[in-house]
Length: 117
Image 1: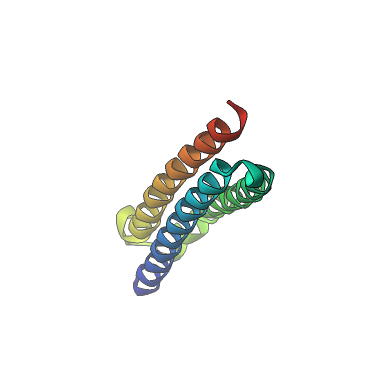
Image 2: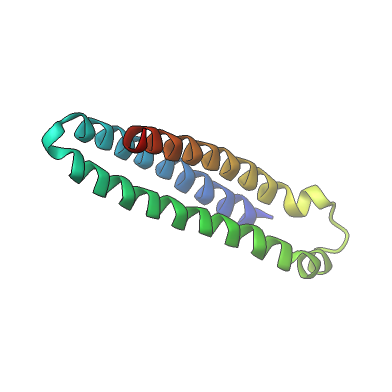
């Protein structure tokens, strides 16, 4: 169970780092978009940021798929432990990743409104 705690904290640190990076990148893109001569460069950076966000969301989908695929094998190897003992950190990481997804959706909506409205 100690290994799960370490993995959880690594996921937590990576999620916080991603959120900070994407919020700062979005702020920089919004600033560039406010300068008329740099609007096309800001659009290019906005597209790049969107692609990176979708790649990160793909990693989240893989995380969920892997957890579901290995569920029965993990339960068999951890026989005698409760569900929360086995998957407590995984569920906590998933909940935090969902918060990260909410931030990404907000950023994508912000970028849409910035460039397409």
